[in-house]
Length: 205
Image (cartoon, rainbow, N blue to C red; front, top):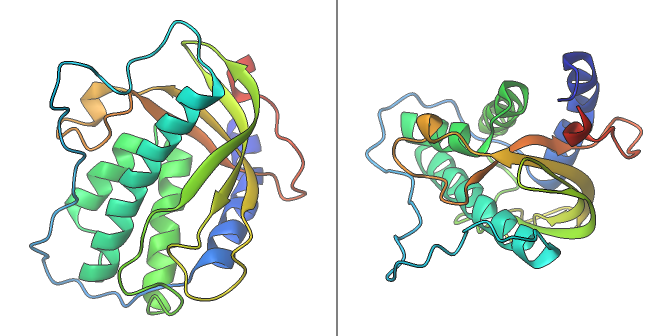
């Protein structure tokens, strides 16, 4: 597990990536009626996110796409309601196992609210996260270098993908009673250090 001091050191890098992609919304506190969309239940008994015997790039990309959908659903709800309703918070909590990175996402949305979501599309799509290098992959932890595109979310700024690192651990069902995140994995790291160097492997602890 990355030490808390190391996590705080990376916050500036994560916020830089988020602000480079998009900016914010008004702080309307009206109670929304919208809900975060969840992924439909499979029509067969096959679990598309079942953990394979060997965790490879294709599987991790599939998991990341599922987490990108969770984030996309949250983004659309927050942009539409101009607040962070309980459904959005619960979905974020399902996707982010580490409390520091969960708070970063909340802080980023709140910052974007204050800016009126000026650079967001009216109906944002999903961010797209793709593995460029697998660093650690087992059934307890995954660590990978990735690129992430915000082109389906932002209407301005560079559409070039951001380079960052992600680490995943098996998700905790108790954190997700409404099944917002069906991937069986949740983030314990999502970003980069201020100097954009490769961080220490969160799976090594």
